[in-house]
Image: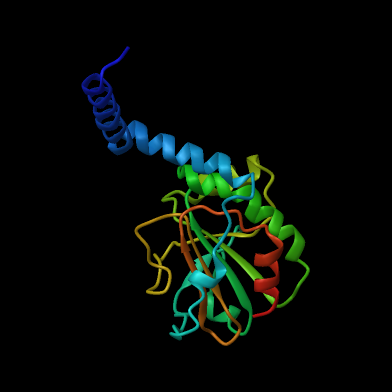
Length: 193
């Protein structure tokens, strides 16, 4: 029979080992992989209520321009008056890549709605890498390059980052990290802005 001291010592060692693994690079990779696997189950989805800025109105900064696929500059101001789904991403970002199939599926369901626009903004230094990644995966959403950098409303140190701007120019949703945006609740949220 195992005595009480041995049992406590064993649990203490397991606890220390768990902390070491959790805080290591391996632990970080394991947490990301687990979250990526959970995306497809529907257990991970955007928390609209928690991220909706109902008590504080934050205006979106429409300054700046992006390059479209053809290399033509597009002004952000051209999108004022529309509901914007904006996602900041890079081809080398694992969490960005994990959420893209869900964003593409959401885009496919809403692409014919003239009041909702998608801006998938790549921050890869080389836009060709972004274009090749999207082409190889057969994603249909429009991508843009942040060739001038990101303005104050879009600047981030964490990607992926998703922002929804309402037609009145206010940020109504802000989320850092990967998510499954292709839910009925989130589609309805976009359509009712």
